[in-house]
Length: 229
Length: 340
Image (tube, rainbow over all chains, first blue to last red):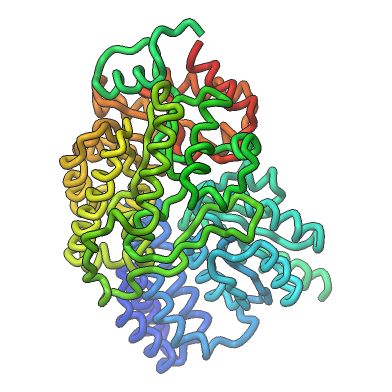
C-alpha cells in the first residue's frame, strides 16, 4: 500500500492533470495509482473528479470556457479508462442506470456528454442514445433497460419543446421515474411546469446537478439501508 | 392606426440613423407561426424546399399580426448544404422540428483544408431562397422590410464539422481554425452578395456559436471578430450581427465588427450594453421568444416589451427565432405595446 504522502501525491497529480487538460499526465497518474495499490475509487473521486470540480469552478468564474471544459473531460476519460477496470462494483453505494440523449431535431451533444461523463465516473450503467433521438426511443429504452433516470438534453429553443412530450410519456408509463432536463434554453420554471425532477441550464450546472443527483441517490440508498439494517 | 410612415420606411430610417416615431417591432430571424401555417394548410417540413410556400409562410406573420418584416429562410442549414452537407428536414414528423445537418462535410482535423466551389451560389437551396425573396418582395415588400440571414463563419464551421472538434481546435490550433473561418467568410460573402441582388432590405449574420457561454471574450476578439469584420466590410445592404446567450463582455467587440446593428438576447443586460456602446449604436433585442412570447401571459409580454424599450433597444426584436406555437393574443399584445 502507498504511504499517505505517496497517495496524496498521486491524487494531486490526477487532479492537476484534469485541471490542466493534460491527457498524458492523467494516464501516467492513473497507472501510478494502480501500481501503488490505491483503490480505483479513491483515485477516481479524490483525484479525477476533484479536478473536474475545480474545472467547474473555473468555468463558473469564466476563467475556463467550453473548449477548456472539453479538453479537461478528455483528460478525465484518459485516466478513467485505465482506472475503471479496477473499480469494485458498488463502490459508491449507488447502483443506477440512466438513459441519456439529445432530443430529435437537436444535434448538439456537448452538454449531454458532460453529464454522461459524471454518470460514467459514478459507476452508473449509461445507455447513451446519442443525439437527434426520436422521442419515442427514450420511452422504449427506459422500459427495456428499467433505468432509474432519464436525462434529456436540448440546446435550442426550437427543439426544447420535444422534451415535454417525452416527460409526459415517461411519467404516464412510470410515475416514479426520475427525469433530468438540460440545455441552454431550459429554465427551472420550465422544468417545474413540465414535471422534470432536475434541471441544468448549462454544462457547468449539468455537472453540478449530476453530482448532486448522484449524492442524493446515494443518501437515499444509505437511509434505506440503515432503516433496513 | 394613424401612423404616417410604413413599417418598411421606419426600418430603413432606423438603419440610416434618422429619427423615427417609435422603435420598429421586427426580427432578422425566422418568425413563421402555426397560425400562419394553418392559414395556408402548410406542413412545416414541406416549407424549406418550396419558394412559394416559404414566401407565403414568411409573409403570414405580418398579414395576421402586423409583425413588421418578412424573413426567409426558416432553417440554419442553407449555407452548409450548398457547401456539400446533407440535411434532414424531418419530413416524417408532423411536429415542428427544424432541419439539421445529417452528414457533415469535414469528419476530422485532416479534412479541414476544403475549397469553396466557384458555383457555390447556384448550389443547394440558395437559388430557391432568392426566388422566395423575390416572391415575398412583390407580395409585402412595399409595406414591410424584407430580410434574410446567413450564419457567421464560426457557427457555419460548427455545421460542417463536429462542434466538439471545432471547439477544442480553436484552443489547440487557432491558426488552423482561423484558416477555415477565413474561407467560410468568403463563402458567406458570396452568398450574401447574391441575396443583395434580390433587393432585400437587411441581412442578419447569426454567429451564435461564438457566444460567451461557449468561447471566451479573448478568443472572440482574436479568432472570431477578424472574419466578421471581413464580412461586414463587404456587405452593402443594411446588416445586423446576432449573437445569443451571454454577450455583455463582447458587445463592444460586436459593434467593432462593423455591423450596422447588433442583436442580443434576453441574457444580455441591455441597459448596461447601451451605456457601453453609446446612444448612437443600433442595438436590437432582447425579449425571450419562448418563456415570454409563447408561455408568458399577455401582461408579461407587455411588461417585457416596455422593459426592452426602457432599457434602450433601437428595435424591439426577439432573442432567437419566434417559436411557431406563439399564442395569437401574445403576439398581438406585443404589437399593441410597441405601437401605442
